[in-house]
Image (cartoon, rainbow, N blue to C red; front, side, top):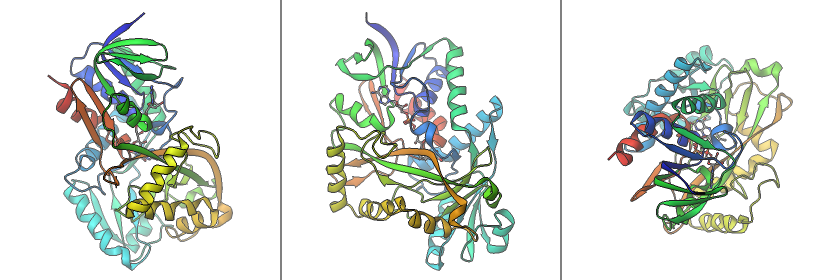
Length: 398
Ligand SMILES: Cc1cc2nc3c(=O)[nH]c(=O)nc-3n(C[C@H](O)[C@H](O)[C@H](O)COP(=O)(O)OP(=O)(O)OC[C@H]3O[C@@H](n4cnc5c(N)ncnc54)[C@H](O)[C@@H]3O)c2cc1C
């Protein structure tokens, strides 16, 4: 039997849930969300660092700059309203050598332009905030960076949506392809829709391709592995310690993050992976792996940004490289204080295979009554509520 809905959303991550919430707030009456897994948070939204970023890194004209801080404040307000754990711990960005000082100054000015609350601090001020953090002369302190429990936020949003009586999250149900312009084929039958939103995270490119659109865009998966400090040493980090990033590439570098349970995670790496869900060494290697690798090779030879990530990051599989990277951010760290964890996430990065470019901003493509959210990379969790508000206003109200 074919069911029908006003909005059909593919994917049940943070992007989908906040979009559904915003659509209901704007008067939508019936939404079906398709999630291929049997619960929420199995992929990026449930596997991230849980850091609410604060609008520091992004060029002012980008969607990331416009939506990150706004989203941060909205999610903080949401956590307070719902009594969800929230840690207003701030974050320091430290320099590893004198050469990084001009970039730190750039970040400071960019952050101010984006409305972020940041201070350039000296070593003595840094020692008061993070006694174990190491920097060369100056560091940046971000006031609004916060930590949250991402899975609890997903559950709370699920609860909100359920309470409206207008949203049906269908688990274990994967979108396969459009049957015609207004009918989707899923693993559990057909669904008719008036509008469809593709929020399929790491599979958003494939869903878009099934509509014969965005054909030059592909998502390349990067694996992020985390380690952590032993319990005895976790007092060494109070909040978040990040390096000055290489802004030419999309990742922020291995950092220290103290979560709400007091565990201090170190990571994530950004190693090219062999599948969009290749969380283990072999687990999640896709039949499509050969194509993914050939796209990685094509990008390696034609794009300097990609080449620098591909040359630098895989080294961090080796513990000594990972350790050396982490050690540059703190005064005291011993190899035996770092232990492995099962925490691993995949960051899908959008490339334009024709232009041989990595796309650095969120991308929204609309074709008639179908909307594709591509490249919902970090800080998409932080930005999600503001992003949903933007997308609904810009693309879905008429
Ligand atoms: C290691 C790591 C660290 C990060 N750190 C941060 C951070 O600290 N702060 C921050 O703001 N952001 C961070 N991010 C980024 C952030 O987690 C993502 O940008 C965000 O979660 C993306 O949300 P999403 O809803 O697009 O994707 P997802 O959470 O991946 O959701 C997409 C969903 O779609 C489902 N799906 C896919 N295909 C189909 C289909 N065909 N049919 C049905 N369902 C389908 C999947 O099962 C999945 O549940 C991090 C990401 C990673 C991986």
